[in-house]
Image (cartoon, rainbow, N blue to C red; front, side):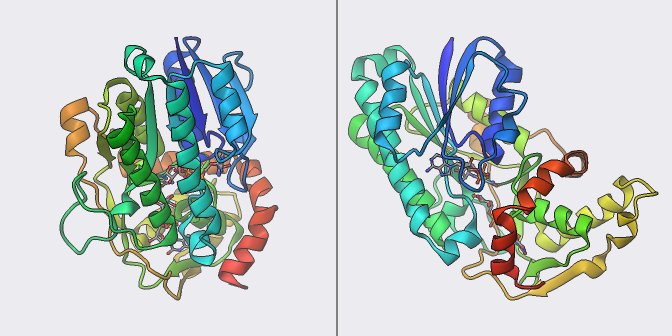
Length: 358
Ligand code: NAD
Ligand code: TDX
């Protein structure tokens, strides 16, 4: 029986990962979810998980040494999976401060307390593992050709990416210095259920449903490499099981799309997936697309080379982009209350600040 400390488990990917764990292992695990419940954390994402006795939620910040210490004091943690982060690039452009705190200092607190409790002897005997969830953004931006490999040098271009790179470097340093059993995964853009609607895909779905303009930065031709969130979770499970300490694993779906292509796909699918009698069906159209000024430091293209995880750990993405997108749109249609609760809160203020009266 393994005890997992999941940080940031009430966010988009973390909550999907907790669902994945319970589907995979049921009673054979103890899951402790430490989440500060920032604007992005939502306990509703785990509504069906809270019934399990082998699930515990703790509200708290990863930078808070006393909370993290107490968790280690009271539990024999086997795996730490650190999802906790400030994750939105646009917010980091407006104010990087909290990004440095959570994404750099928070990682150091987790590493340091794990080091204290995972004595040199039990780290290896008991197969302890620390998995830092990172991103392809730390590699910077690509031109028209080429891919990011694990050997690509770090070259972040925005404060979010720089703070994630800072966290990654600390993780590496704890391996090099103390031989801590750490691993880093770097994934491309995720999409799927429970994603907060500040991010491109749920934002487009939400704006289509409410007849709002769709803001496209720059020329709309920036490229992202999209991966269905459950494929990412599956990869993380495999890395925890079979990954080697000190290693970095890239995760990607080989699904490069220009932003404008993604937006057009959502519009096209929504036109078919909304029931014929739903009056919103007529409103969903390309006329909603509005080009606005570009994001500062906007990376042009991301593309992951995921050969290492395929070769060494036998993982590959299994969800076709169109299928994953249909599933995602249907999830948002079936969970409109979830979306409404979010957009009626802090999101409204954020949206106005970001997009004005668009
Ligand atoms: P998210 O913003 O949806 O969720 C982040 C979660 O972390 C929230 O529940 C929030 O409450 C919690 N959190 C924030 N600060 C905290 C703190 N100081 N202490 C404890 N909890 C805190 O983010 P996400 O999209 O689920 O991303 C999860 C991780 O995956 C991040 O580390 C991100 O960098 C990485 N990542 C995301 C993507 C993507 O496409 N979304 C791709 C690659 C990597
Ligand atoms: O309104 C928008 N208009 C627009 O054109 C928004 C929100 C985004 N975009 C563009 C910017 C990007 O080129 O769409 C693309 C995707 O944007 P985001 O959804 O904000 O994602 P991105 O900046 O690529 O970062 C995401 O992937 C890497 C996650 O938010 C990060 O946490 C992850 O590390």
